[in-house]
Amino acid sequence: MVLVVGGAGYIGSHMTQWLRNQDWPHLVFDNLEYGHEAAVAGSPFVKGDLRNEADLNAVFDAHPEIDVVMHFAAYTYVGESVTEPGKYWKNNTSAVLALLEIMREREIKKFIFSSTCATFGEPQRIPLTEDHPQNPISPYGQTKLAVEMILKDFDHAYGLRSVALRYFNAAGADPNGAIGEDHRPEAHLIPNAIFAATGNKPPLTIFGNDYDTPDGTCIRDYIHVVDLAQAHALAITHLRDGGDSRFYNLGNGNGYSVAEVIQTIEEVTGLPVPHTIGPRRPGDPARLIGSSAKVKADWNWNPQYPDLRSIIEHAWAWHSRHPNGYEDHA
Ligand SMILES: NC(=O)c1ccc[n+]([C@@H]2O[C@H](COP(=O)([O-])OP(=O)(O)OC[C@H]3O[C@@H](n4cnc5c(N)ncnc54)[C@H](O)[C@@H]3O)[C@@H](O)[C@H]2O)c1
Image 1 (tube, protein in one colour):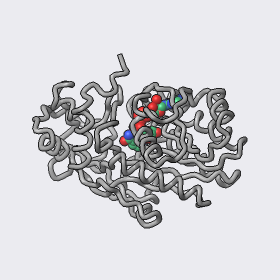
Image 2 (cartoon, protein in one colour):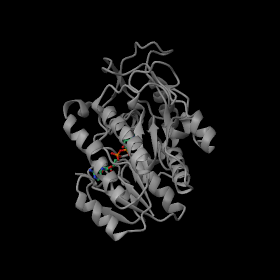
Image 3 (cartoon, rainbow, N blue to C red):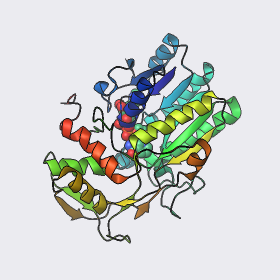
C-alpha cells in the first residue's frame, strides 16, 4: 500500500487520482491546512499532521501493509519562508526526518520525495540538469535540499531507498476538470491569470518586463500535473522492483514566457487577461528551464501534455467548472 502524505493538496490529489484509477492500494494522509478532502473523494483518507508522531504511528499501526511512502506535504510559499523560516524548517525538514525515523524503525524502506527546482538557486546554465550545483537562495529551497541530503545519508546507513523528484512549475489539472489547483492564497501564474480574466481577482501583476528574454518577461518550465503523477508511478515501480535511490528533474524542457502564458490563456478562454507591469521580484531569474533527459532515458518517462496549450486548456476545464475551487474554505 502507498501512503500519500500531503495527498489532498494540488499535486498529491492528482497522484491519488492516478492510484485510484489504477486500483493501486493507497491511503491519503493530510492535515487539510492547504488540502481539500473533496480532491481525494473516493480514496481512503486519514486526517493527521506530519509534525505529530502519534498521528503517523497510528496510521502505520493500522496499516502494516504500507510499503511505500510518498511525501508531498510541505509549506510552499517562498516569500513566507524568508519571513518565517522556523515554520518551514519544522514542517519541510524536521517533520520529514521524524517520518523517516519512524519508517526506519518499522523497516519501511521506500520513499518518494517532492523536491524542487528551487534547490538549484540562480541557474549557471540552461537547461538545468541533475548535476547542476545546488545553491538555493530561499529557506524554502534550503529545507528541500536538506531533505535530499538526509535521504542520501539514510540510504547509505539504513538502506532506505528513495526517489527525489525536483519539479519545475507544476501546472494544469485533470483533463476532465474534476480536480485541479486550489491554493489559498494562490501564488502561481496560470490560476492567477485565469482569475484576472474571469474577474475573480484584480488585474494580474507581471513582475518585470525588462528581462533579457525575447519579450522581456520571465521564462519558466511548466510541467503538467498529470505527467508529474505518471513519473511518480514510475518511481513506485522502480523502488518496488528493488531499484536504487535516484534523483531526477521533472520539467518539460520547454520554457514559456509570462507574456506567452497570458496570450495562450486569452486564446483558450476567449477572455482578455487584464494586467499591469510591476517591479521585478528579488531572486527571480530570467530563465528557469529543466532538462528531464535523464528520467526519460532511464524510465522512458514520456510526458503526455508537454505543450502549454494543453496545460492551460486543462487548467481552464477545472477553473471554469469550479470558479470558487473546492468551496471548502471560508
Ligand atoms: N506546485 C509546484 O509547482 C511545486 C514545484 C516544486 C515542488 N513542489 C513541491 O510539491 C509538493 C506539493 O506541492 P503542492 O503544490 O501540491 O502543494 P499543496 O499545498 O497543494 O499540497 C501540500 C499538501 O500537504 C499538506 N500538508 C502540509 N503540511 C502538512 C502537515 N504538517 N501534515 C499533514 N499535511 C500537511 C497540505 O494540507 C496540502 O494538502 C510540496 O512539497 C512542494 O514543495 C511543488
